[in-house]
Each structure stands twice: as structure tokens, then as C-alpha cells.
Image 1 (tube, rainbow, N blue to C red):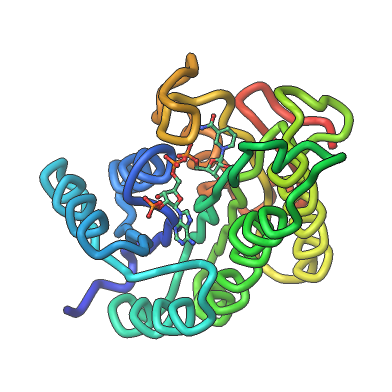
Image 2: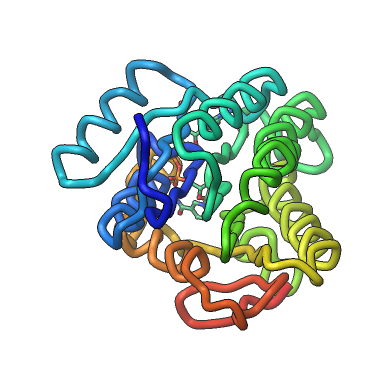
Length: 241
Ligand code: NAP
């Protein structure tokens, strides 16, 4: 399927539900073609159908961020369909098991830590590095990493979660490293916090809607060329590290 060159394409990881789906909807509403990255075929196809029903130009991309092979195939699929990538939103994330003290430091289950890092941090690195050649072909490429204020060492909000919270601290650190390496390029990289959002992730027991959570990611995905780099933002501005 050929696509006109002036249509911008955005890949959102974990776009089948929650905040990722809302980011896909929001970017689609402002004219992006949206690549819906999701690991489950059925959930992905259903999300693509819902987006298309809402008028969004969406296509599905099989993507498990923990698999090198899946990520490489996703990059090949986007190259084939769109030829380049304008926006990458690294949204996919997990909290990890917390039963039986699995995320209390004194009884920390290191397998849980590995699993959470593999998705929340290594997954972002895998996807970003696979997509960078496609992003570099765009005029104003943007990368947005969905972090959390739980990763803020200054704020330390929420419960003790010694796999999840440090995974977002490391994601913030990695974000600054990317921004430093890409400082002389047109690729702008930032991290954001969506606030406390009603999704599966929070058992839908949180005050903000997925659309509210998506807003900061959409803003960072559409920054002007002189926009901030290597920062951590929410709706209210800069989030302390
Ligand atoms: P959610 O409803 O649980 O959605 C998470 C998404 O990530 C799902 O699409 C899920 O796919 C996907 N995912 C998980 N592991 C994946 C993998 N290995 N490969 C590909 N996709 C994968 O959670 P959410 O609340 O929307 O969270 C989205 C992001 O926001 C996460 O990074 C989270 O840490 C962050 N965040 C959320 C909140 C909040 O209050 N909700 C607050 C701060 C930060 P499946 O459906 O296949 O599992």
C-alpha cells in the first residue's frame, strides 16, 4: 500500500489498550498514520479496527518489545509500509508481579526485576535502535519514552515497588543518554509521565482518563524543531528527576 510522502507515520508500542491506544487515537486525530504495535494478534487487529472506525489511518505491526526478532520484523514491516518513521512512542510497559514481597527490597525477586527491565528498559532500547534508521529519514523525528513519576528519585510517589519504580528511573537515565548522543541530530528524545490513569495497569482505579494520560506524550511527539531535549515532563511541566 503506497503512502504519500507528506503523511507522517507514528509507531506506538503497546497501542492495543490503555494509554497507548489513546496516544494512537490522538496522533491519528491530528493526521498521523499510526502503526499500532502490539504483541497479540487478536488484540492488535481489534485495536486497528476500532481506530479505523474512528477515522484513524491505522495499520497493525506485530511487536513484542522483549524479542529481538519481533522488533526487527516490526522495523522491516514499517519500512515496507511507510518507508520512514516520524514518531516513536515507547509506551509498552509492565508493573511486574508484586505478590509475596516480590517487589519489596528485602525479599526482592530478581526474576521479577529482570522481567520488568526487559520490557520497560531493554524493550525501549531494542525498539529505539531498530527504528532509528527509519526515524533518521524523517524531517523532524521525535521519540517519546513513557516513564512514570514513580521513577523520580526526588518525588518517590506511590507504593514501594522495587522492580517497577527503578525501571522507570533507568528509563529516564537512558532517555538522557540518547538525547546526549543525538544532540547534534534532528532526533528529539524526551520522557514523560501520564499521571495516575485508569487502565488495566491500575485496575481502572485511578482518577485520570487514558486520553488525559496520552496528552503529554502527544505534545512531546509533536514538538517543534527547537523543542526541549532529554527532559522529563508531565502536564504541569518538568518532572524532577
Ligand atoms: P496497560 O493498559 O496495562 O497497557 C500496557 C500496554 O503495554 C499493553 O498494550 C500491553 O500489551 C503492552 N505490553 C506489555 N508488555 C509488552 C511487550 N512485551 N511487548 C509489547 N507490548 C507490551 O497500561 P497503561 O496504564 O496504558 O500503561 C502504559 C504505559 O504508561 C506503561 O509504560 C506504564 O508504565 C506507564 N504509566 C502508566 C500509569 C498509569 O497510571 N496507568 C502511570 C505512570 C506510567 P498486552 O495487552 O499484550 O499486555
